[in-house]
Length: 574
Image (cartoon, rainbow, N blue to C red; front, side, top):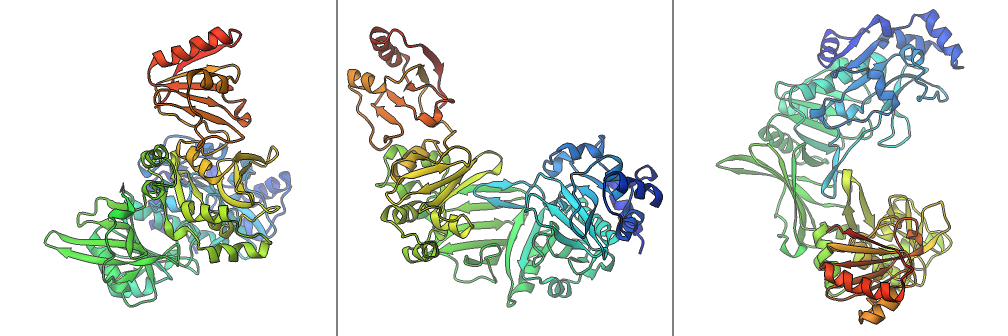
């Protein structure tokens, strides 16, 4: 089986061409394998003959630069690169792809979902798009089956194509989807429904790019694909289309089938709303939702007006809509509305300052991700841990809490989420969430401990309320400094916070203070005695104020009573 002219021309249009300079004959490949201590196998020689020499990018740079740790941006940045053939890998000493039992390396590539225009917009978490930036390793088995390893979706090998030639044909078809502008709008369904959709919509099969792992159907203005391009979700069907009307016809074709589905668009606007403003769910829909989480309830429906056809996807919980995704007739972007703002849910539980800070940060809470007492007890029972009252209170108030940060990273809180995700109780401590470099656990008395796997586990907060009060101010990890909303700051070389507060009549803030650190607050001044775990990051005592005169008054007392202290003044960040 030879690579089709269509595949060769499509790859060439993106700067990916086959060059003899990147190919190795059998003798040369045998020498390279011996040099690197790899065993030889006929599958390797067959792969080299079939696909060896394909390399390139649509950018004027060495495609092998990616092996040093290149990253990939959105489609507009034109980061697409690929190198195929065991000879080319070994010639350039690219040994990042280690041989596994029964598998041999035959290539490296940009994430395959990227070729279909799906990367970096694979899916949305919280209010940001999560990106896939790592390289994909390509390996061949003894029988010629090609598998991939994409670290962005896990370390396991994923069967991807029944032969190296079909691998190239698939990549060409995925590139064609993006080049034809079909990737902008899509419908995703589970379980596979490609044959049903192809028959209903009139798409023709593309046998040369189809096998047990993917099946492709093509038409003028849409493409149907069984199996996700990343290889991570073989039970999915995707419909790539140029219009919302075409996707609506696909939704109609799925009605009455066992499929659940979701709509997507690579241009998204997100609006965050209070749960109290959420509407009641629509009375009917054509196709249920729950693509990634089967317990989700809701439906996908079609709305027809004088201006055209819209697709509306709603997820509901407790008789109210949690989130709605809507593709308008023009199909230029997906409007994603989420009635999940967490702030008002903490009114009366945390201080108004914390509630306002949570609102300003856009912190969300998905109530469907919080567990009942019975469910929490069920999760803990196999580990011999009882659900303490503080633990249940935390799950009740903060289970399903989500905070986004830069680059699509996010933090989810909740003991049930952690245990269901495979983080198990340790020595009677129950996991309640994660930070960038470690995990949070709750002890039976309600204390929150941080564990970064490096230093000994330590108390981060005495209670979940104090934890959340400081969390609201941005102190969501041991190495993250809380941001107090003040314009001026003064850092002191020693901790004189308690004496200073007493002298100035500034009361201690019990909602923020515990054995690890203390805050004293008034209308115009904040004094913070910082925790020991931040000793390498911040000064022992920090003052915050909006007015410089307030800072100067406090410093005058310090200079009079502790002249040996060094003082550093700075502008604080709002």
